[in-house]
Every structure is written in structure tokens, then in C-alpha cells.
Amino acid sequence: MKLVHLVKYHWPDNGGGVSQSVDMAIHAFEQYRKNKPGYTQEVVCCWQQNGKPGSKGLLDNGIPVYRCKSLFTKLSTQFSAEFLRTVKNRVHEDDIVIYNFPYPLVDLAVLLGLIRGTLVVWWHCDFEIKGKFANAMFRPLVNHTLKKANKIIVSSEGNITGSETLRKYADKCAVIPFAIDQTLIEEGKNYYRSERQAQPSAPVHVLFIGRFVWYKGIDVLLKAYSELDQSKYELTLVGDGPLFDDMKKLADSLHLAHVNFTGHVSDEEKKEWIKWCDYLVLPSISKAEAFAIVQIEAMTFGKPVINTNIKSGVPYVSKDGVTGITVPLQDTEALRDAMKQLGENTALRERYSKNAIDLISGKYSMDLLDEKYGDIFAELENQKQISKAKG
Image (cartoon, rainbow, N blue to C red):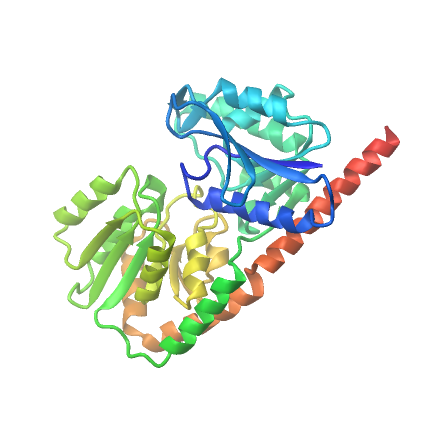
């Protein structure tokens, strides 16, 4: 049996949440295939840069990856004839395919019958397409794919209940939350124990981590921060993206003090920024934000989270009144008040911190993720054996 991961981009082009999810699935299958000779897996994706020639290589974990040449990009979609050819050549009837949704070329491959193996859809986010024509074209493709799928994976129950599309296929859905490596969980616990004795920081350190894209709501965060007493707060925004310069200009126009834009950072640098902060702010405004792995990364080190009540998995990860505060979408005043409340109430931050540490250990460990994936792989493999026996 072979497991084929289909994804729009992967390392080194894009190291966001979807790429991390693919790596977690790879890790889980490596655990599942132990003592199973002949079980393999590979990744098929596109180059992010149009015109860059395709190639076959290996990921850092030794998994083969086929990077396909893209012809052009339209509506955030890489169009690649080579991707479709590679899917046709690499996917066979005995394979299991994990389609990391959304990527319309995979939906097209399903429609054309190029994916002959068992189909699993990893539903990373609900889709929001600007333009009636594009939406009218894509939505039927999505529904066709979901009907064909043997299984649909989501990171949180909220991604099912919050999606009008996905609710119709709830019986096929399985929840597998993203996870944190056990070594990092232990590091977070040790950090939390040592920091409990430390004096509260002055000013209060506020942190945002994420790509500078429209659905992150960075403009809302900057406007909310402008209404705080900035002599008592320091805001750092970690990340890069197409709106980076626009957000710096907005910060300048608001005459903000103590604001730092770091640009892209390494994983180690990101971890240090998490340790630096008093709490994380995730001001996202769209269901395009389905989970936000950065929430559990911050909670691993006992950091409270301010998030928004998106109809997705986001408010299910850091829970209002338990590990942080959830505010309405695009509500500058509510976000300001939540930032002020956590900034002024150290006892509340400490309570949320302890709850975050406990929640990570109990719900977001790699062992639990491996177990949940293993159950799905075994179920799909059993279904294939039954189908072969009947055939």
C-alpha cells in the first residue's frame, strides 16, 4: 500500500499550517507502517513560482516529493498540467490519497477520474471565493469530491458545524486536532514552571504570529492597539506576506509606539518570541482560518490567547474563559478591552496559563494524533480488503 499526499505547496516553498499538517500525517503513517514491508508514502505538489521546472527530491524525513511545474496562477491557484499528469501516473487503485483541501486542480483530477485510489479529504478550511463566476465553478467540484471521498478529516468539530458545505457530509468526518511534539511539550512545561516565579513584565508584551494576509485581521489588531495606553504595552508582529508593507504603513498612519515588525523568522526565533510575550492575539476575520496552529504553539508555553468567534475550529482550540478570551469578529473595541483585561490582570493570565498547559498535554500530543490516524488507516485498509474480497 502507498499513501500519496496531494498538496498545493510544500517545503521549502511554503511552511504554513497545511505543510505542517502534511508532516504530521507523514509522521503518523511512518508509525503505522512499522513492521509492514512494502508500505510507502510520497508527496505530490507544485512549485510556488510559475515556470520553475518540476523535480523529484526527498524531504528532510526522506519521503519522496514530486514538485510540478506551474504554468500560471489565477485566483490563488497554481495551474499545472504536469501536476495532473503526475497524479495520474503516481496514484493507483491500491493507494490511499490524502487531498489537502483546497486546491481546485485536485478536485479536477477527481472529476477526470485520475485518482483511482481510496480518497481522504483533509479539510483545512472552508472556502471563500470572491466572484460569483469562480464560486459557481468551484462549488460543484467541491461537492463532487466530497461525495467521492471515503473519509474527511478536520482539525476541530467547529469546522463541521461552522460549514454549510461540510455539514452535509458529517457522517464521513473524523476530527484529528493538530499536535505538538512531546519534546516541545516538556520544554513548555519546564519553561512554565520556571516563569511562574518571574516578575510580571513591564510593559506588557503582546504578540501576533502569522502570514500578512487579509483574513488574519491584522488591521483590526493595529487599530485596537492604537486605543491602548501604549506606554504600558509593546506589540510585536511576527511573519511576512503580501500585506506586510501595507500593515507597516497603517501602523505609521496610526502613530503607534512600541510596535515591532520582525518579518520572517526561523522556528527557533518564533519560539523565543512566544516565550517573550505575555499573551498571543489572533484577530482573524474569516473561516479561511480553520484552526491556527500558532494557538497551540503559544499554549504549549502557557501563553493565554485572544482569538475571535469564527465559525471554524479557532474558538474550539483556545477556549473563552478557560485558556483565553474570544471576541467578536472585526470588533476593535472588544479586542482592545480583551487586550487591556489580560494586560492588567496578572492573576487571570496565570489561570489561563495553567489551563493551557494542562489542555495541551491532554488533547494535542503527537501520540494521540498518531493513534487517531492509525485508526483511520486501519479502517480504510480493512474496507479495501473487504471490497477486494467481494470483487
